[in-house]
Image (cartoon, rainbow, N blue to C red; front, top):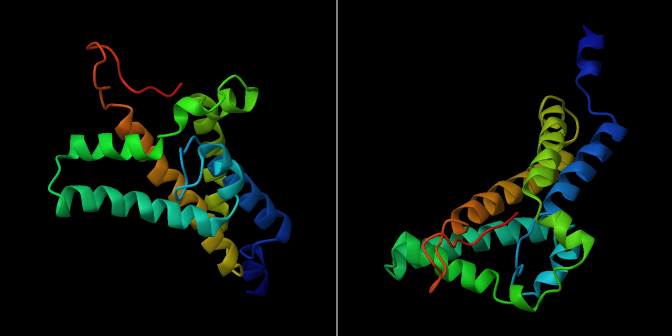
Length: 169
């Protein structure tokens, strides 16, 4: 039946909004220094799915290298990753509304759920392999960075009291 195949083809507006939704979700995530660039550039850098993939791979490689090759404990590797990725965090002006929006976990996860619904739509259709690849790049980058943010939020600061943890609002 020809009409059944036409229903699963991704329309250009759906493709456009899927990419925009997932890109916005990824771009507004607090990510620290992306590929060694200052953290205030991360919004602009993460608009590229190629940068997102490179950043996610760097994250995975850095953690794996620290644990497997350097022989560090997972806790030490997370701390080293946090120190390197957020090295310029204290220099960043955090008074702006965008920075506060970026560090809002509830807003970020709300955007993720909206983006996830678009991703499901892209995966459920055919005819747009590049759109699927781009959406997958943004999605994978978001998941890897969110897992790292969660992981490093559990790392205690050096001289902090027992209740002091690295926190993202």
